[in-house]
Image 1 (cartoon, rainbow, N blue to C red):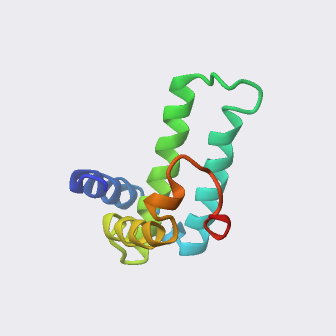
Image 2: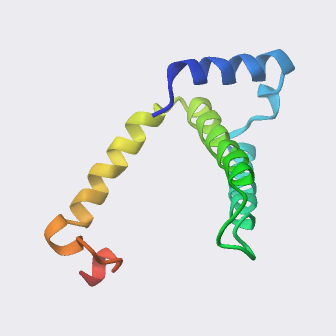
Length: 106
C-alpha cells in the first residue's frame, strides 16, 4: 500500500526525534481517530472542502495508520488485501453492484 520509502522516512523521522517512546498502540489509535475527525471537519460546513486542507489531514490519518501497523508488526498492504477479500465475500458483485445497502440487507 505505502511505498517502502515512505515507511523508511517515517521510521527515520520518528527515530530522529525519539518519539517512538510515545507511540504506543493506544496512543496511535487515538491519534488516528483525532486526525480522522480533523479530516471530517474539512467538510463540516462545505462539501467543497479546501483540497490542501483535505490533503494535509488525509496525510496525517495515513501516517498514523502506517505507524500503528508498524508498531504492531503488521504489513499494511497485506491487512488491506486480507480485509478486501473478506469484504468481497460479504458484498458479492451480483448483489452489491450499484447499491449502498449493508451486506445483511442484500
